[in-house]
Amino acid sequence: ISELSQVPLPVMLLPDDFKASSKIKVNNHLFNRENLPSHFKFKEYCPQVFRNLRERFGIDDQDYQVSLTRNPPHWEGSDRRFLLSSDRTLVAKELSSEDVADVHGLLSHYHQYVVQCHGSTLLPRFLGMYRVSVDSEETYLLVMRNMFSHRLPVHRKYDLKGSLVSREASDKEKGKDLPTLKDMDFLNKNEKVYVAEEDQKDFMEKLKRDVEFLVQLKIMDYSLLLGIHEVGRAEQEEEEEVEEEE
Image (cartoon, rainbow, N blue to C red; front, top):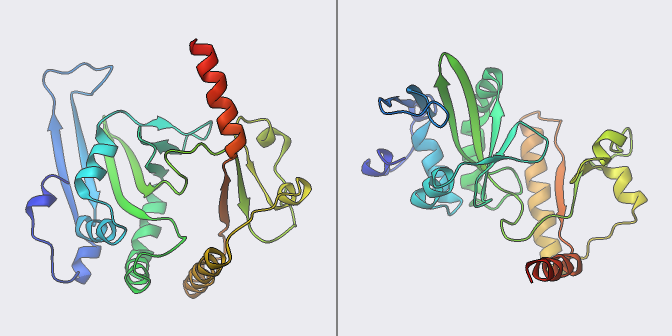
């Protein structure tokens, strides 16, 4: 990203930008193996494309770099596929090499869609894709904006498909600290989400437009991620923390 900041923004992206990559090799002679290997390689896919996407999503490159590198990220919950940045603004998903090829295949369509909707979408916001090579072991990461608030904790979350067929979380999943619940769980808990009329209209327009885009790409396996923050519960948790400190 630091090197990219020295490169002028292109007037328009070219087909080759969607195939491009940049690589660096780091030789760390004064190393502590527990914290950093003696050498590793880092590859950034389609740097100009993702730079353009970050700009369209209103994300400053310097802020992005700080979020990724200031402090080590941590695994999100028990799912070892997702890393959360220390400031909770970014999520990095571990991919397979096949997943990387799939992202490459849809990236030009995704970018065009983001341009058309002016970055106003409920779809995951792709910000960067990388490969890290350490001791011949390769790890692929797709960095996205955290869809949830980085300030307010999520007390419940749902993966909703609009179907009731096999749409209930398993007992094992429900045993987690923050399980990913499903459509049947939403109904069984009699959950209701109240949204202002204007916000509801805006939300439904985005949802309809996003679904139409996914249909055009013949993508069928998608769902709506819903996070619920309980204001009363959060206030109670804060009071309990203050009492413990006293």
